[in-house]
Amino acid sequence: MKIIYYVLLSISLIFSLSCCDEITGDYRQSQNQNIDTSKNARNILLEDYTGFKCGNCPSAAEIAHEIELRYPGRIILLSVHAGYFAEPTTSHPYDFRTPEGNDWDVAFGISDIGNPNGMVNRIKYDDSYVITPSKWDAAVLSLLNTEPDLKLEIKAYYSLSRKEISVDAVLTYLKNGLPSHNFVACILEDSIVQYQIDYRKTPQDIEDYVHNHVFRATMNSTWGEPLSANEIKAGTVIKKNCKYIISDSKGWRIDKLRIVAFVHDNSTKEILQSEETD
Image (cartoon, rainbow, N blue to C red):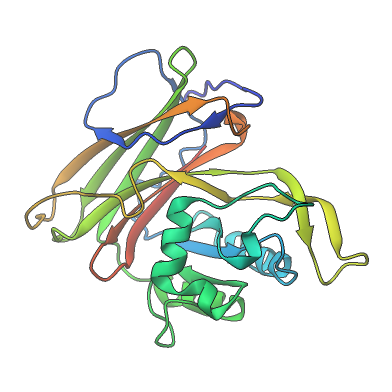
């Protein structure tokens, strides 16, 4: 697909909970759509809950990256900074936390158990949503061969004049769906150089640690928006569009941002399908 995107320095994003079914204006399409239209595979979202004060978290991030490489095109990573280990300090005031990440952290009780920990498609594995990094690979394997409920295709755009990110999503149901199915669009940022403790290193204080897959915000609230008020029949195609307005307050870099979108059952919390793009 054609690729045109703008590199903007020292810009950031603010919430805009607007999702609709149309897109107009001078938008530019993103690169790397990562859409497999031939196999209808089920992608797996691996959420790594972390914090810069967590000295064991860098090794967990490496485990997540190794899993991503092991199953190319099937694993989507989301690094969520929440809880005590992500709380800023006087010497390190940079704040990775987000309201939505805090909501997820509390809802699933992740900080209560401690970091590093995470979730795999928000399923219960060994009777718990919260899965230790040593079990992430096994949890991923348990899902890789499961049939998807739907196919999800996304494209992301940026309007220079409007300072607006827009995401188009097309959802094609392969099985019947439920009114409890919600759509969530997330923004994350790669290659953020900030402080991190790493117990494996000497000294342990890493001033120039590179944080990747950092969750920044959702485009349509913590739990997303319902796709239908009624049962969704197999074969149904649903189109969504979400917008997110840019401000100049946080310094996020548009060329390092990625979009992760997923559909989940808001009753069980299980993620049914996910996709990502630059």
